[in-house]
Image (cartoon, rainbow, N blue to C red; front, top):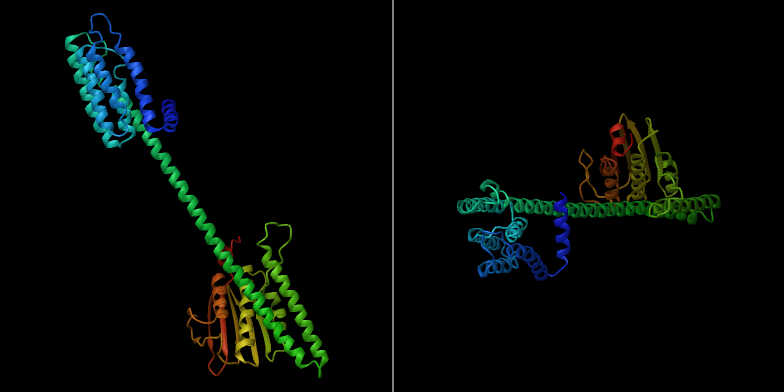
Length: 410
């Protein structure tokens, strides 16, 4: 492994150079060691002559093109190495050009090419060793051992190439993971924007509607019933304060600082306050609550508050009703919320039957908000005209242990 790391460090440094410069430096280094071995031969063996240097020159020139034609360079350098052995030159460094060429074949190719090259190189090296051994006492080892040395650079190149492929795979996986994190972050930002828009719509639109109703009552009773007018104006003031408080609590989540505490979300316990905002607008409101309504999931409580708020806003704005009833009833793990009035289906209230049919994709923005609120809490909603006159909004919300787990509660 240390040898692999050394080759990788050398390759990294060489990679900073222009390709031709790096190849010339490799050829020069190989030539230095190979020439020093070729120039000195033992007594009784052929000494260096013009053929020796010709083979060396051909090998070094071929190494310059090893990146572009690795297999051809391996064939040329291998033939030169075999030529030295058959010509009578024996040396430990004469096979250095073919070692570099074989390493390049493996590191720049694939496993199938490496295996084919290994078979051919081992067979040729063994055959040359056998042929040379007939003529001289072979100082380079047995033919079997001579078949193994070409496998060393091929194995090293295979290890280096595999490591590079793994690194590229890890980098690609990390890049995909980073893209997935960015997409997930963008999705959460979009969801948070939708949630904030819904919260702001609920707070501003519904509170302004209630304030408009109370302001109208105060204006009508200003001369004849000043006490009623004062009560209505106090309600306008209280509704404005409540709207400011809810806006502050909603916007707090956008701040980076956590020093200021966030006000609790509105729930079922504040439905009475919600009904008071709409009193005096010509609509008589009746509130009914049944069952165990304590300790409900926060998401369910917020959904109930917003559903009732939206439904009462539609009653005041569009129905022309004289009476409306709100009921919140719990049966086991299911909470039923109903808002019914005796007005007509008009304006933002689309006339859809309530005989079991679920709310479709149509309807006004207010009814769409009701449907989204119920879906966010894991529930369902239906709405439509009531036989005999009137309009009904009914929602079912899960409030049992399963709903608690959905919201991250134990």
